[in-house]
Image (cartoon, rainbow over all chains, first blue to last red; front, top):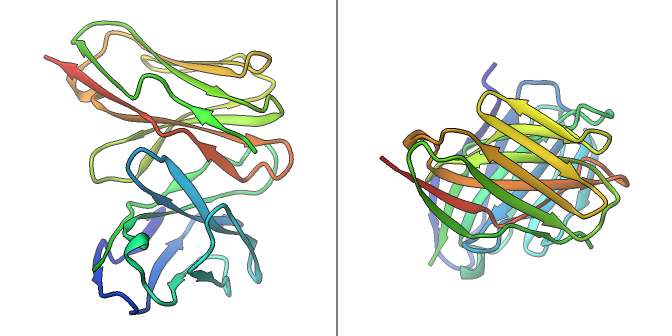
Length: 114
Length: 113
């Protein structure tokens, strides 16, 4: 199993550009989520999904879109990048049934917006 | 809203020392609590997951305890090694929507040889 994979590992954007961060998992997990990690602030939840076709907002959803067309993939779209979106982005997945919600994380995407 | 705090933010100890990392949370209605390790420039690696009905979990030199009533968890590392140097994060989920986790900002541990 590859676990949770993310691409790209690094990305530099100019203000106003759009891009998609890719996330995939091969563990047949129903739950997938996106976090951003900023210095001194821990991880903050952006969006999450409990299954194909179902998404919801987390703590900091503004400026980001998600969709979930398959169980395996959960892309995160930046519509019009801003310097405040410079961060490290992590994707995570888990099962949704009780006692099996242990979170597994991808290696992260480091994004810089100039 | 669930607030998670980890103190201290950084800790430096000599090799071989036993140490305790702290995690506190404001809402005791948690479903479970997960401890992670993060190496510089890397993702998070799960260390231990404690269910709300459990008091502790052990894995090798690591022991995590949970006291829901006081809103605290500790991660005990025995006989620390330089390879334990990393940032340790705790995250709690609530009974309502137990897949959503709330993270502390972490404790950066440095174990000196």
